[in-house]
Image (cartoon, rainbow, N blue to C red; front, side, top):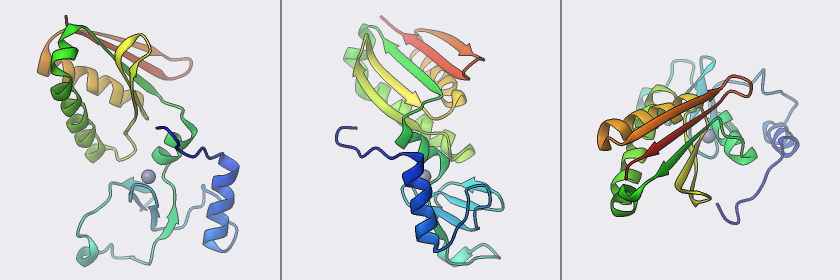
Length: 173
Ligand SMILES: [Zn+2]
């Protein structure tokens, strides 16, 4: 995203320590914690998606949450994706709105299963009609399946075990 601030891990750690008022590490994060960027909540040692209207059904151990940044938002800041989906072919030119809507819908459904699965960036060009990066390998694969199911075309899946990176090529001419 243009003009987006870059954060280092050092900045992040310092900030959390400062906001919590005492030293704590991510490993021993206090619960509940809420992500200041996306509103995801950490409780019972797992992340759950932002709850809307959850004020009246608070967790039984509810305390005012600590503010933090969830791993998915941290990943967005550091810009290290785990998956890429490359979209190509003439079909995309004529139907890019439908295609993009499908990707958004599918990533929202994926976030219900795993709130840390997110689309990181949408980049037009760079040798493809569109490149979408994701925080998890699984989400890139899932988006590939969704494209294939909704719009046919050809899909190719590559997975690098070395750097745990999924690359999905989808094309419809
Ligand atoms: Zn977040």
